[in-house]
Length: 226
Image (tube, rainbow, N blue to C red; front, side, top):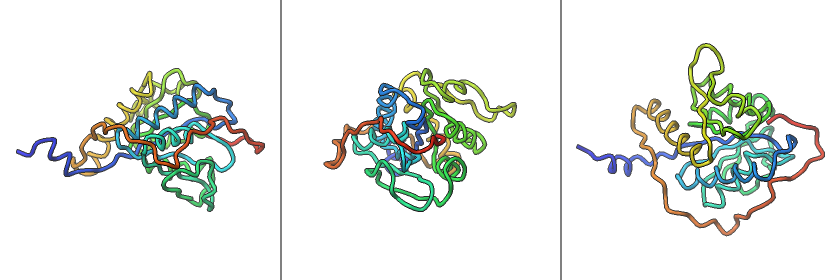
């Protein structure tokens, strides 16, 4: 009989974990940004791929998560709106301009690229992303106590169909642990059981170009949903 360890070595599928949260125009705190960065670090340490909605005009908790992942040498994928790659977080490994608008089409591409999503606080854009995840039966984890739509929806179903619960997490560590477990189960259903839950990897040094930048950039543009 093939051991789980051998299966895990043979099947090196990386799980794609989305981080959704408020944009800077919702005036989140520096402490909230640090929580998002920590989630990004933990996803990288679990060898996951961090998927996030990349903005072009202001910072966000999703972008903060990207910075955290890059600090740990993680792989990040930025889904942005429109046609250009001129995003705030230029350290992202992969930038995908989806050609669609923010606050609608871009969010479909973003969420459907994920095996699980973690929500931190969040405004109307995060609400849209969670609704898409619910419709697509993609696991959702909300950071309890972070405010916004994450707090409003934690521990609830979107409707009486009760397809999938918005799972609660009290800490970044719990959020990522639950996301990894749920994402692996989601992927196993899709690939017939070939995906193994990844182990934690040894701490990876940050690449030379990685840097910790402020998570409180401001913008003079009109408020946008996220």
